[in-house]
Length: 165
Image 1 (cartoon, rainbow, N blue to C red):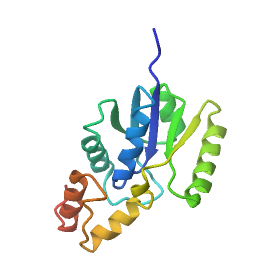
Image 2: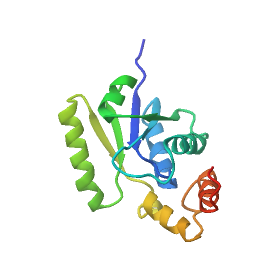
Image 3: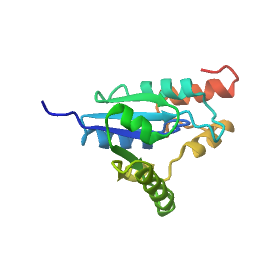
Image 4: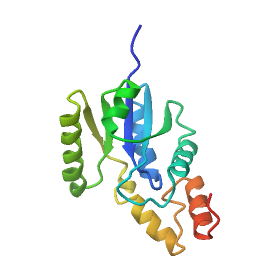
């Protein structure tokens, strides 16, 4: 029996953007399964709750049959082991991302020698895109419909109106 190749794509995804989805699409062509690993993330306050972020990611990935979203707590290397994988996907947008992402990859390797990190670059039109930029635009009532999936744009509008999602 051939073992299924699983890759995880960890992050806070607060919120998921079209750039994130582009990375998942690329990874889904390389691996049997891609798990978008949504971190509980205890060290910074998030705009959306863990449950909301997981729900939005699940909805955003609906058209990628071999991708799914799952939340986790603790170290990402432990979550990878739990899923039976050693492959971690990370997105790179700019040179400034590379330094930070390399540090993360090296630390994950130190924590678990089996972990391999693969860096993917999103489509050119998503290179500038970040979750914090989306949150800032949405906070002042700007249009984010070309930056995020419709479910996220709707959730941001609901949050701005104080209604939650």
